[in-house]
Image (tube, rainbow, N blue to C red):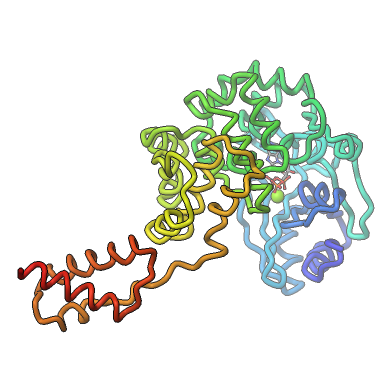
Length: 403
Ligand code: ATP
Ligand code: MG
């Protein structure tokens, strides 16, 4: 079905011509074979980049030379972007910063990729081209390096993290032993990677279907401490994963990172710096450093918390507290507390500044103070008072002050 999408068809059609051949490659082919939804489609082609641009434009498609030195052109069809990369072969140097030469040899292009499951190609009619046995590995849930794992890791140390990320996403059973021991052997290379590249792979790993297994193997092999720069706590991570599954909740990478590695506020700051996290991510991470509560809050206390924290922070902190307390994922009381955002909408405080001003007794900053004092009463009373009752409370507080 993904090959029949009008945009994909248009790109295939545009690139076909007298010479050359074009195939979809990588993630799209892999995910389609597994029956998973296909996000973006990448193409590999024997057509040289200038010709890719010319043919795309002739077919009325936008073509942007986004990575000409390594042969990549972005072709846009119907608002969808496709990366079209001319087959290449490394010369002299290897890896990410390698000098490349173009080739017409599909096997050579395949050999430059990282894992056999990523070296799968599909023609426009769906014919599979699988030069390295990637399909068999995919079906078996085996993530296998192409070529000698140690050498491939030395070309690009990010492949260590990708090995774990792809295992977390597609693996079944034990990790490929040769690949795993190469990752452990070359672990010092992780230090050479930029924070952004590490963070991006780590975040994807943490939300993958088999994240718990991948995290546990990473830990057992000593790599997880290197990556996080601290000693993590696996049980809390596993419990959060279980809880999210029990609630059918979309996993959040940052919340999972928090469960794994944030115990005191300083942890959150350190990780935010280490992985160059955004302000929003940093704020979410910081929640884990603050205690939610000693125990499960009763319903009234939970509502007060939700009102004060807002729905997002409340839900994040409740989930973390639940995982920290080691209550089972089936616990109905924790389930109720953690899903309160879905069953109860926090009311809006019915008084505003002019209501206080109208009492005729307050001015300037006193108005805000008074408003907050009444709001605190309202929260403590379980949000029961309506506007009229609150005006009476305000009047009484004012009278008390005078008396
Ligand atoms: P996803 O998009 O789900 O991460 P993908 O396989 O499409 O999966 P991309 O990062 O988009 O991954 O890369 C596209 C293809 O390029 C991969 O399938 C792989 O063949 C190759 N590739 C990407 N990164 C590397 C790398 N670091 N080393 C070797 N090959 C790589
Ligand atoms: Mg991709």
